[in-house]
Amino acid sequence: MKSGFVSIFGKPNAGKSTLLNALVGEKLAIVSHKSQTTRHRIKAFVTGKDYQVVFSDTPGIIDPQYKLHEKMMKAVKSSIEDADIALLLVDINDNFEECNNVFSSLRLKAPAIVVLNKLDKNPQKKQEASDFFSKQAYCKNVIAISALKKENIDDLLAAIIGCLPEGEPFYADDEMTDLPTRFFVGEMIREKIFELFEEEVPYQATVLVTEFKEKQTLIKIAADIIVQRESQKAIILGQGGKMIRQLGTEARKEIEAFLGSKVFLELFVKVRPGWRNNENWLKEYGYQP
Image (cartoon, rainbow, N blue to C red; front, side, top):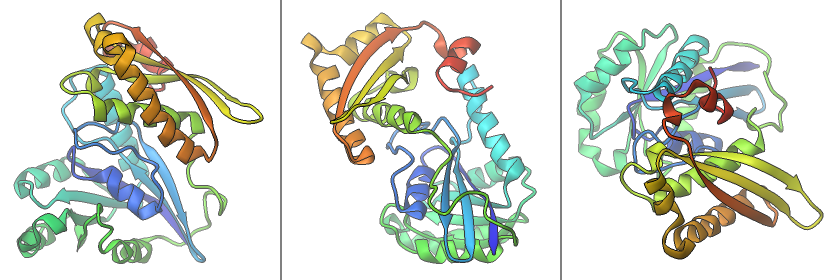
């Protein structure tokens, strides 16, 4: 039996969350074309007959500007410390030297597989990228994929399993994650904020699920959308409440598909100036110290 922790690292928008979802075969991590969508470490388990892989999706590596960013980078650090294997994800269209500088700064102790992503968009750069990263001291292997199109995902998983240490599973066969359902509900609402709103609103908003009650015919969910300014609250509400109704409808459909149940969803918008730099509020909203 083989088992181990495999953490996914990379710059913002490299496709880490899309890769996690492709490896697991389920949508656990929210996805957006906007950078810094992932704020938490999300663990997902893939269990086979003779292996278990505990994957971690991590926030994109950035220079922190707020306490929120610092907590995001702490999630990256904790993933580095317990990783048996590191997946270093590269957008094949990115600057290779910049990616190399980011990876070198991680000071990895675990062997690393460099994963060249978005191969479908620029296949002609595969050899150049492979030649560049295979020369780096941290690199054990280079594999090119398209996470979005699920190309070469099986080859990547086989390579990961081949590098895993021997050991017993950490989690039961039927478990897929150690995070509560409330967490994923909040993330699905936040994903719709990234999809529907532009500029600073998605980055200055977070979601707190305040109620999750399973009734006979449906699940009742209430959530607060936290923003920093009254003007942002007005944008999310929209004229006559148009935008929050659209947000609620789209989020509810996503949540119902995830839970396999009818959902009654209530959304409220609250203004908390400076919440991204407030330790108490960050803790209340689920950002670990």
